[in-house]
Image 1 (cartoon, rainbow, N blue to C red):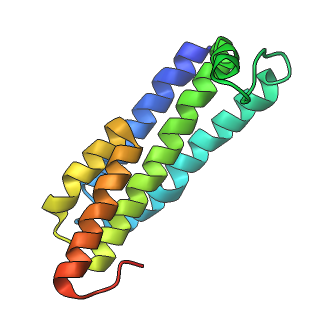
Image 2 (cartoon, one colour; image 1 turned 135 degrees about the vertical axis):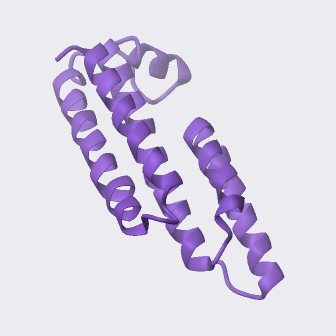
Length: 144
């Protein structure tokens, strides 16, 4: 399978997971299972396979920004980096949906956080933990 095919399949799989997350108020168990474990797990298997297959021959490393750029000049490791983003962002999105449901947050307030997490990962996480803290302060509950 070519890197381009893996990229396409991974993106379609991730989009399906995000669609399930957006339906999580109506399908909480499916969202918890698919978006929190199955899809991030599949993406992680593909990631691990690419790293195992191509890491040894790659130039670069993690000790400087220039070396990170060199590392991602290897097309397969660039793809591995993308799979890393897809898997972790979906895992965080699933945690957000589950945490919001457990805290009793209205889903319409959480949806922008999910969209931000899908598009900009840490920005969505930051938006959610801010929302959750504000909600906890307003209701007198804890955020842990």
